Length: 431
DNA sequence: TCTGGGGTCCTAGGACCC
DNA sequence: TCTGGGGTCCTAGGACCC
Image 1 (cartoon, helix red, strand yellow):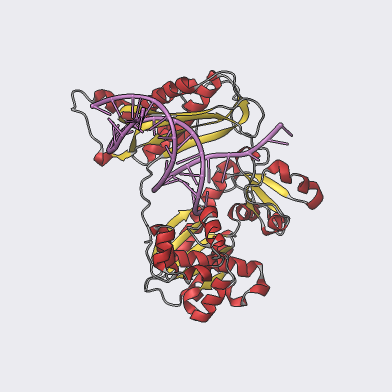
Image 2 (tube, chains in turn green, yellow, brown):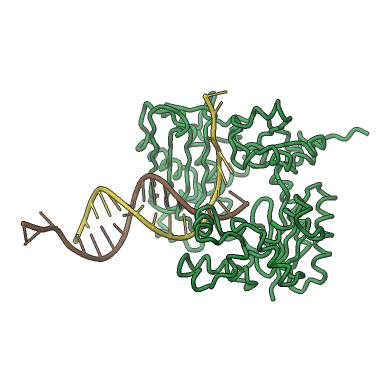
């Protein structure tokens, strides 16, 4: 039988902030999305105040005064660095690791003895070394490990509702069938990995409300009434591992850079600046992955939350040949922008998506009648990437990014220092 | 006044072509 | 009376995940 663990940082962004500001422990705390728009992480105390995931800040702002709610701007440099540290310690639990998101990883546990005790030790080590509280779920498939992780978290949150030994680390494999069924019976179907809002509602309408209800269905019915994907989920919940661990991340098929503006913009010049910046950054990501794009999609739209005329348009601009240099991508992007731009609207968001990516090895090369041009472009890009990485983002920029005041750039009012990721922000201990 | 960003996969409808 | 059918491309949007 296969065995998997899922380690997940509790309220990860909030926990990262608390490491460097211990006075935030036990306080209602949220981390806001870009532009301080809405809540993307909530401490337990903030959840207790009723703040929901994605809740707009202006709707919960009154809790600042009335209930002591604290909000911070997202600091992704800090969270990324804390994530690397957490993942490196987490990897010690298993024989293989898949980093699934910034705050979660799966581990393969083939041939690992005493997994439950080992998981507890790993959890304690992560907490002691980097200060991030985690929960660990263990099961015979990735879907079961996810479910076990949910139970471990919920048991920590509501000690009365579960046997105490399931809090923080929950190993479903150690339990009896009867115990597992009890847990499945008190767990909402929406907690299953792969069942979202829509399918969840459809199942509930059919009277299938808990994980237990779902696993008691017949797999043929699940496939017929829903899909093969859901049948796979059913099998995973029965301990039949269908989804493998992916140790090496697959190369991206698309690379996006999209942003909501700090303030709406109307003019083509500002939009051109934004699209130039976004394309440059997307192209950097593309080169880091050593891929080439065959097309670039550009979009702009107004805000549905504001009164006034609405306009949303996107266009996919094909490239003559797959490219990774900013020049080629930029001229296509700006051509696209000019095509879709319409004056007289308040635009709130724009973005570019690099599409149909291919890697170097499968790229079709043209007959080489003088590749000195493209070699020079490669060298130029390498030099720019190197300088920007060494001296900081934006050291070398494209002219159409503009040098004036950028009304479109995002606003973050409450950002904490990048304690671990920038030299000048490293905390100084005074003893 | 004020509603994120990055992915993957799928579907539907219209334009266009033969 | 009676107005085809198949294919592709593009755009838009939705569902799922974090």
